[in-house]
Image 1 (cartoon, rainbow, N blue to C red):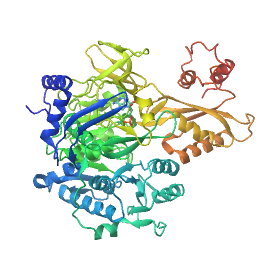
Image 2: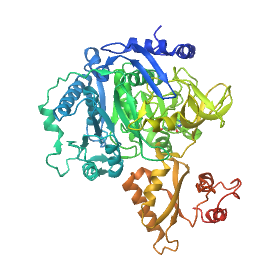
Image 3: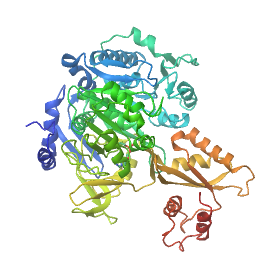
Image 4: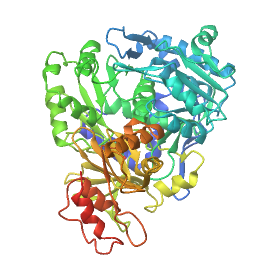
Length: 635
Ligand code: WTA
């Protein structure tokens, strides 16, 4: 029996049990049957969570792009690999076949080589959702360069931090990007960032909006003429299983962003295997994930997972609201989408628009609906199920993280009975545990605790770039011999998991992870600000929104408070990006602090959520009197 495609619940349990009893045998079988190796592994797994060190398929040699492209050429050369849907619905969609993708990736890889990029070099990719983004990612992988994609909504300061953290020698960008009715000057943002990045030698620029941009001689080059001249043959670099494939930054609760390092073989095997099963992908299907490749969801489930299965994967450049809120459904109808994977925040925004914009589209092609990035609330789940799936397309609520590389807890559609707001059961190979506050595992069902994973899985991040100690401290120190996710979860009476949210100072706003500390740092940069504290509060579209408590240096500040609020949000936009802007800013004279000077965020969170009935004992605070004052002036 092949493990590769799980077809019913009994088989799921069988496969799951096997994957736990003999993880090495299980993953070896998956890896043996479905991929192209230059040399197979000497050892399937070597691990030690105390160091922590994890190695999968050690000794194996491969190139992931041969698995995502070359091996499909004979049987699927003419099949569409990437279906590009532009921002403007009047612009024609592009169907890029596997054969064309091969040519484009090889040419791009040769351009990188000609520019001096070698195996192990870091290349920063700062591009909108245009085909060059996927192509450049794959071109890096082709030659063994480590890509570091930075979401093109990040500011120049955020971009510079990420470029410098992993010493990128090249940046790939475009002259600009379209976003609904707006255009964005991406090249200008790159220019600004590079004022702080000495290590960058070359900037390659794709043409997208045909704007007039400044070219810095000796550094900037248009991509097109270089591609035109490049050869369409590029021998893949043969990589070791554990060679880094990419770095992707994610926010921590404190400090600078963490460059999560993913390696080659395990990541490939896991993303391919999960893609096939979680979306029940069949050869003729057209699959669409609405994420941006700048996030892990795009890496694993727009690029690598789908292409490793020879799938047709849609890349959408635009936004759900342009030209109107019917755009997603128009695309589903136009390309006869079979699997649709999006975020709860998009579902909630679309649900607000009513159903007229859905009813005039034929959504009957849909077979599977996915959700990712944050907990999906009951109302949004039902809206999605009723209006988009018409109760015929199972919803896969997939829980996972940048760090996990692939989907960890999820229903398998048509296999696992779904339950609103529950991510349900662990994927084969995944061994979750719920831990109590004393570090003990809570066994049995109907439990509630901190979500950990007990055993390694192939696509887990191996380290934080340049800071292995931080990797250990963040993920392997809270609980002995466990990977700690940072999330809370509960397990119901049948063993289904429901993710309840972050238990640290990371706030998920519209599906984007934001650390409070970096935002506070940005706010504190404003000359009028003395101190600040940021917490999340529930928001009906974004899931969470940000509430800032700000102490001004001069409380009697005579400037207009609304102007100050605008300036503070402007600081945040410059330092991080518009996604981190505060919804509410309350000016206050003090912040509740413990005697050791720590801000009591628990109290601030409650006030921001308008839940002041049970603030707990505030008498031990250094300054209990500020609490009432903050409540009285809450927004
Ligand atoms: C949250 C995104 C509830 C969770 C793939 C996690 C979820 C963080 C779900 C990782 C889900 C993701 N239900 N919460 N289905 N999926 N999360 O790194 O808090 O951008 O720790 O990876 O998103 O976000 P990241």
